[in-house]
Length: 453
Ligand SMILES: [Zn+2]
Ligand SMILES: [Zn+2]
Image: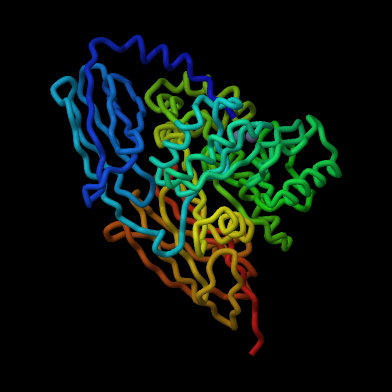
């Protein structure tokens, strides 16, 4: 998916007058420099720009004179900080960003299975993408340019920077888009493939040790609507190119379709991925512009969703402001060590949760997502939330139906809750967390197996 944002770039440039340099660096609470993402927002000037530090946490930017809110982030495990900046009076800023939560210690690592560069229709160099993934606090990331592996060799060199980069290919066909994750050689494809040919493609990916992800299954260009095929591993029920959980939009259709698949006993794991084409999320400026421009901007991508877009103006604004960055949204996998093979295995098994902010850890009698809990007449669901953004409520869904709704009040971003499930309500359970739109997270299913007494 691509966003036409040239118009907005021009509008922004027209409002620019005098400018000055601002530089600085970002450190963690131990004074170690860290890569991070910075956004300068001036609501009054309708100006918004995103930059990244370099790998060593340093930044330098030219800004039009004025007052800004500077938002500094490094993914869900670090605080989201907003400081005031004044240009030209501020010249150098040293900002500390605390790590609030450490999921690494619990074996959870976040990544993004769907990213683009200039090697296909993305806007960025391979290094810009790798740096922005690191700045988003991602531990692993899959490059998935359309029908090419040309960026893969360079992509893999960024493992030396501590980002576990994985080569991939977005096999882009008239029939739909699928990600071949963890392949070494270009997977042959045809613009138009029959179901049988598609199943052959799945096999080729697997022979290379990779896995197959069905991308944005309800995209207008991806008629995977009934997903009759077998042999794929993952379904991207949450694509960053659309808002999450909004009736009338395709991510919501994908989620509902996936719930039906689970009810039919098809245990396919879900993923959330950004499908980022522009690490600066230039599109976010839509949040500050009149709605007719926003609708204009969406016309190409949303087509028949135009009515839904008009009816959800404020939500779409909030979503645009939240940004279409690498890792928004992302998938956390649970692994015993951070290797490509472990990540692929955990993705396939669904030992994962999907999020654009809240961290949701759920177990039933000790079994986590992708695992099976052996239960008798009652099962104890244990939910822990860690979040650097506000979370308002949780929904526990069993076999596609809401069985518990829980109000959330976090203390220092943390919340814990236990609730009993009745295994006769269904064989799978997911936990969803909701904050102010578009803040959202969902676990993959924990499966319940009844043991007769
Ligand atoms: Zn695609
Ligand atoms: Zn894509």
